[in-house]
Image 1 (cartoon, rainbow, N blue to C red):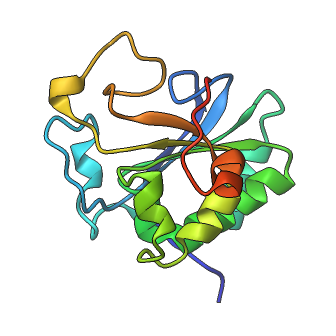
Image 2 (spheres, rainbow, N blue to C red):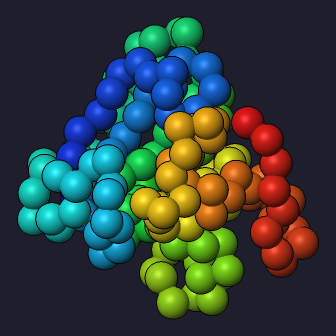
Length: 167
């Protein structure tokens, strides 16, 4: 039986979820439930629909203009193993991967979240940290609040600590 993920939806072409044209995959289910979240319909773990990673990337591969795939939510790390498969297939297809998470990089490194290291390993850029409405700013590029960091995932994993970068 193929691996599945529970999704809130996908957007075949976005320019607001990272640089370039991006295929966006929204995870269904989020434990953080940040006040002021721009996507509260994704919080319920029972909502959305079930999808197969191969089918998701097959859709993305139809568009030769895409730069990459963005994994958002909800919380992709709540389904880290399935989202790691999406990320692996995206990278295999020559697409970069940006993952948004309410967890911090340090929380993900602890090993308490099953499959987190696998998803980190296939993520090029990680935007980490919960959305904080008191730190919200429309001036931030591709993130909602100033506490959220943009991390070079490979460099962060190699260093064992968060390494910031720019989009």
